Image (cartoon, rainbow, N blue to C red; front, side, top):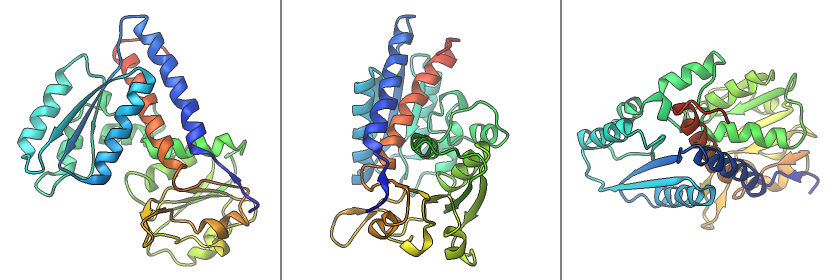
Length: 286
């Protein structure tokens, strides 16, 4: 293997240490950062994610409030809870774990979270601010991807970046953040022609397509930085990324593993957004 691993766990520990220091700074001024996490239903993956977020809060000194609601919770009841937390000045960030049960409109719930407490960075207001380059809460996974690329010492400016995937959660915001770093960005998706050719010319390749092993070695430019956002449960019961790791690692300069890559960074960036929210809501500079 020629590629150097981008250790998401180690980098996440650095980011969480920053968040912990920010928490201490805020507490010294009488502000206790607080994140409210709402989980509806019994989805096993969501339960794991929520447990991880609660543990991260504890590690950073952030108060976490956990709300576990039954799968048959009505949309009006969920919106009522979001409304209560929105009005609670002691709560600085609100996170509703997705996906939600079929009877609940995700868009309505996201829209109900005040932009200043939207630490996931999903609200239309924060998305719009990101689009025009104004200060906002950045979506955690794409922000984590940028931090991981920067950790390699790569100067993103002027590089050709290819993002595979156009979801609102990862693909689109990742492209915007790369553009903000002055990369030349190509967004690819299921209908892209000459996909292999485009990927093979990318200095930075971000795979967020949700298909195990989709990116093969012949799609990776020698010396590229490869960020694998995919989390797929394989036939072997293990987690695999969107990138064929063994093949890509032979050509890339830097590559993220799955697991232990983007996942830990996503949660760490959430902690940073929470401390930022607590500071902004109280007029404190971090």
